[in-house]
Length: 203
Image 1 (tube, one colour):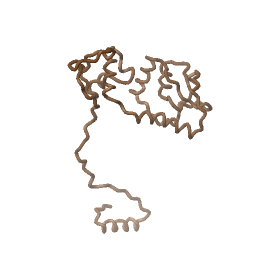
Image 2: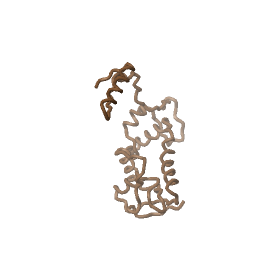
Image 3: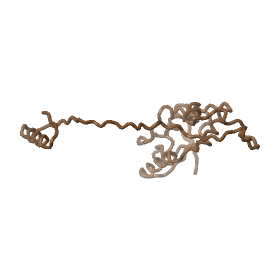
Image 4: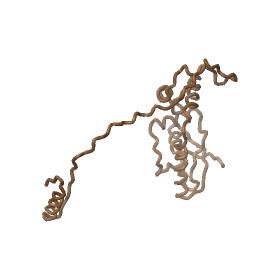
């Protein structure tokens, strides 16, 4: 894999990109790039310069004032490029968080006064979604010594999902149907047919 650097304005956003980047997502991408720089190259089509992977990062770097960006060019036809772009996004979605480990890592970063918002998290995610008690971790994660049993509790981290609405939703009992006829005979014919079926019909 050869990484090259090209002007950012030479790169074209994928017009058929199925991945939507909302404001919160873009702020997280920009925060990470502003903090660490570009550590992952964009994937672009070598012929068209259209982005296959990294549309969000491309937008973020433009907003941050980047003039050149690192890319990897691949020689793919339209079908192959489309499939790769979907695969790059879908494969990340299929992964799952280990919430015990995630909670510990986020907590250790917060203890070091690291701005969690720069990587797409925040204290409310840590405290509310993971239900993390600040007193859970009382030991130094960098220490070679095993913590005593009274220094750390074994708390299972699980995200708080929205409670499912178990109330049965009432189904509509009446529907309004508008029919356009070419003549009065058709109108009368359908009226009598529906009425004979036991339906309530108004004209």
